[in-house]
Each structure stands twice: as structure tokens, then as C-alpha cells.
Image (cartoon, rainbow, N blue to C red):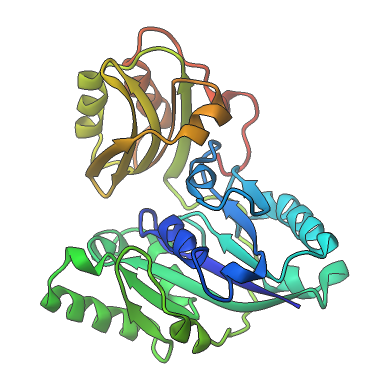
Length: 317
């Protein structure tokens, strides 16, 4: 049977970084793992950030992994993985707004019974921002409550007193599960060995969390740096996550926004090849008008972009 590990956790907690760390060494990395990468937006940014390019990778980019609208794609991926006969493990990176309903029924029923063993649902927690989002966004809380283990990531960004308080909160929300403190997504194998999956049964959610949506943009027009960051400042209370390449006058960079914290670094080359556009990024927002947000970003370049999400609207788009 193939071991299955789920990496969950709210937007920007460091799931892709953790995934890359798990692929660097240890039993999981040596098991020729298949990767299932799920994103809420329709541009595969996280898939482009995975470092081991030779691994089998299945990207599901039209909704939450724990949503009925992606069930067919997920089952198709499982079928290909089971049929290949070359994998000994599966790593699933769920979108940051996924409701962590147990997917064990997918793995144990029908033609896939006997192929997969769900080893653990790992919740990655952003030590610096968790308490900010947990107060008003349900997925951040339910991801912790349903986890088989909790990894407090980005511990280097908080002091000892903040970390102690956060750990107390998390252990109150989900007692009796292993908790690990780390930075940069580093997980010790001894911690993974302590994890025991708890089987649960719930109905799959049918749509995205209320008031939350994603928009993907793509354009070959040069983007005004001043206008772009002006929009980020103007909409900072509504933008939960932004990530992707943006082509400014000064050159193309990878821009990432997590809880109003804006970072920029060298462009992701594979993302550029994948989308064949100078600029390609996804915005996940809440509590604002979707078309208003779209217009604000479109004003940052000289002509209308080739929008990726205007062909077919899935239930979670």
C-alpha cells in the first residue's frame, strides 16, 4: 500500500516549502512519491514552485480538494497513480482554504481499495499570522481541529512568549495530537513516525467558503509598478493571498502577499513557460466585490489582460 500524507493549513503557512523539504531526503523522498497539488485559483503557481521536477505531479486548480467540484479530477489522479505501479507514497498539498473533510473514503472505497493508506493529515500553522485569520475565517480553525498533527511553522518570526501562547491555543483546539515547532518547513522524521491518522466521516462541502473567491490574471502588457503596489495598499484588508510573476518596467519578479505582508523575489521561470505571458498571478480575496477587484488590477496595465478564468466558471471559482 502507498502511504498518503496530506499537507493542509491556511494560506501562506508554508505548505509548498514544507513539501519541498520532505522531498529533499528521508523515507518519503526515497519512495518516488506522486504529488497531488491543489490550488484555489486557476494558475498552477504552487506546482511551479516544486523543486523535484522529475516526480509525477497532478495539479487540480479549479477548487478546494475537499470540494465536490474536484472529486472527478482527484479520482482520476488516484487512478493514474495506482495504475503506474511505480510509487510508494503520495503527497497531497491542499489549497489553503480547504475545509479538511476526511478524504479517506476516496482511498478505501471502490477500485482503489487496498492501494492507499492515509498516514496523516498535517496542518501547517503560520506562527506569525494564525491568530489574525482564525478570528474570522472558518477554514483556518477547522484545519487545526481536524489535523492528525500540527506543525507550527515560521517560528523564527515570533518571540518565545508569542510562541508559547500560540501553542497553548492550538493544543486547546486539538489536544492529544503531536505538535512540532519549526521554521522553513523542516520536519523531523521522528515526528512523522509519531503520527496516527484518526478516521472521520463527513459530507464533502459543495462550494468555497462564504465571501471568499479567487481571480487569476494573465497579460503580456507591462505592469505599472506604482499602480500595482498602490492597488495592494488600497485592498490590503481584502487580499488574503497573492502570488505569481509580475512584469514591471524594471523587470519581472515573483510577488507574494500573505496577511498584508508583501514580498518580492526573482521570477519563477516554469510559471512563465506554463502561462506564456509576462505576468501571471492569482489573487485570493474575501469580503469585497469580485469585479471591483478585477478592475482595480486591470488598471495597472495598458490594455485588457488575457484572463484565464473567463472561459469556464467552476463552482469554486
